[in-house]
Length: 331
Image 1 (cartoon, rainbow, N blue to C red):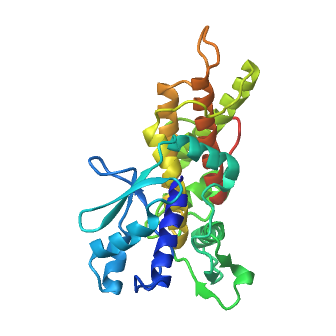
Image 2: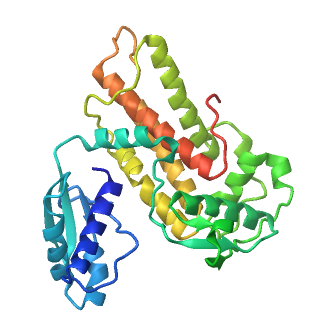
C-alpha cells in the first residue's frame, strides 16, 4: 500500500462514517498521511481526527476511534492504533513497502503522483504580462491539472485566480540563461520571495554547486545505469529488499508534495522536492552500487537497486516536466 492508497483509504472511512451518521463533520478534500517520526508507532500516521474534532463536536480520540473501526482490516493494513490526543497510526502488511512503491512508479511512469486530490475544482487565471508571473502561472496550471482540477477554458464558471509573485528584475533572463535555467531561477524561489535573476550564471555551470545540474544529472545518471545494465545483460526488477529509507520516503511523499504545490500554488515546493530526491539518489548510489563491480555477477540485489534507481529517475523526469524543464538523458 502506497501513501496515496492509505490516504484514500482513510478518506473513504471518513465518508463512510459521515454517511452512517456516526460522524457529523464536513468531509475533507484529502487526508494527509506522514511517516511516523522516530519513537512513534507504526509505519504512517495522520492527524485527521484532530482536524474533524471541532466540527464534529467530539474529542479527537473519539473521532479517531470511529475512524479506526472503519479502517481496521482494510487491504494492506494489518493494524491501527490511536495515540496521543487522537493520532491514527497505521501498521502496514509485512510485504516490502518499497517493492510496492517501485511497482506503483513503474505503472504510472512520469505521471506518478498525479491524482484526483483537486477533482471538482475549477479555476481560470487572470492573464498576466510580467515575466515571472507568466512562468509561475503556467506551471501552477500544469500542477492543478495533474491533481484533477479543471483549468482554463474548460473551467467556465470556476474561480478566477491570479498569481502575483515578486516580479523578476531581469527581463533578458531567458535570452541570457536559456529556457531551462531561466525557469528554474524563477520557480525555485517561493512566489513571495525575490527570484535570483542577477548573478545566477552558476545555473549554467555543470558542477555540484548548481542545484539544477544536480537534479538533471541525477536523472541522466539513472538512464546511464539502465543502459549499462542492458550491456551487462540484465535489467531492473525489485526482487530483494533494499535499504534506502531516505530515498524511499521521498519517493513515497512525492504525490503529497505535488498536491500541496498545486493547492497552495507554489511550484517551489516541487523544485525543493527534486533537489532532495536527487541528493538522496546520489547518497544511495554511493552506498549501494546498482551495477556489479569488478568480477561481480549481476544479482537480485543489483536488479533491485537498479529498479529503485530507475524509479527515482522516473519521478525526477516527471517533476522536471511539470516545471517545464527538460530532462536530458546525457549530460
